[in-house]
Length: 197
Image 1 (spheres, rainbow, N blue to C red):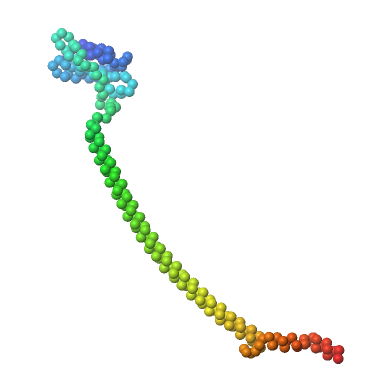
Image 2 (cartoon, rainbow, N blue to C red):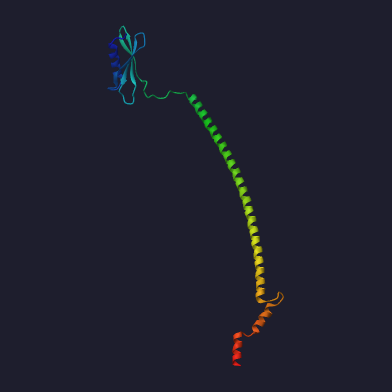
């Protein structure tokens, strides 16, 4: 069982090592064995939330002595991550790079397969489009042919109508008939001549 005066002795040692007003209330006593005791005190320093001042005291026959004074993190303290050797960090980095390369290769393969599927679909669509265009062209040609034949028949009908209107035989000269028509006297002229006579 430690002596009561050892706690105050340890506190004075912490105050001497800490900044002004840097030591708080007593927290815990740890018995290390063989007259060695560690006293823990709160710290009031900014940026060290949850940390503690640790003072280890050896209680000898000649009187107590301070073994060490440390600023130790508590259970809720914010501490730096545990140090990892460079060889292990390098191995982790290499493994990560290999994984990223594998994922990139898989994504590239998937993209190539999708592009191939799209190209085949485009080719099929082009073939369908070509077939449709050929069918449309044949339909338009047939329609034009029918229209031309209709025009020919219509023109033949018009020629027959003109022949019937002029009362000409198919072999008769239209110019001769037009000359005869010029020699004829109009009817109103005939009437006037008859009146004069």
